[in-house]
Image 1 (cartoon, rainbow, N blue to C red):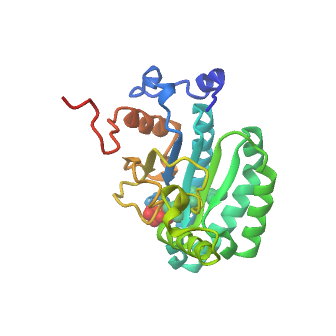
Image 2 (tube, helix red, strand yellow; image 1 turned 60 degrees about the horizontal axis):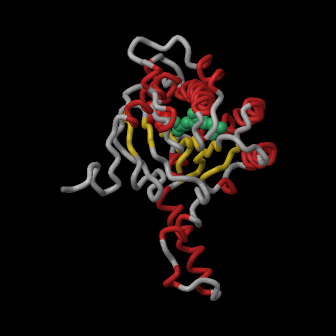
Length: 263
Ligand code: FPP
């Protein structure tokens, strides 16, 4: 993806001591970076604040990471905002999150327009409260023609549910005679996931030190590299994103093969 060198340099000036921006290989920026934004609640609790304050602070981080990803020329940035399991949280927290999602989308529309970001949702947004759903639909329409980075927000998302949904869609096509079972391959399945048309994540970042996948993009992360940091999401900055990409660029990605030809 195209990036603007001047804007890149300006956005990443004043690097902390442990980061040498010249080490970043711009030809090997991951096309799709995915964030499991964890630790908002603990960040807030550690400061004696309500958990919901952590979510508000998390939105500030998300804004910075969106901008940083655009500056770096990332094609797709995805973020896990709300899982199908998150409905089990206290009602008040769910309500605040739903309100925050809607407010954030409206507040950030100028940024998304300025940076030419197209938004897609991963997950069943039809099951969200009416106000949140309406705002999402309005925002989606506002960004529909953008041609820059894709921001894929996983809201009411579950990886297993997504695969079940794809299986049902394919079964219906077989039932009505428009698809032969022997024609189903990996591409057919991928085309029936919420991420249809998007490249798979190459780099998955999980904050707050948890070593779990949490039902996230189960199909799509088959060959993703993981970067786990103890940093809570509200403290995650553009520099943490660079650290993650530098770590990614230091990995030997073999996709089941060998890194050097066998003798
Ligand atoms: C995980 O922290 C974070 C969330 C469940 C929500 C994250 C959502 C945002 C940052 C806003 C996204 C914005 C839009 C527009 C979709 P946690 O509560 O699980 O933290 P804990 O593990 O410390 O409890």
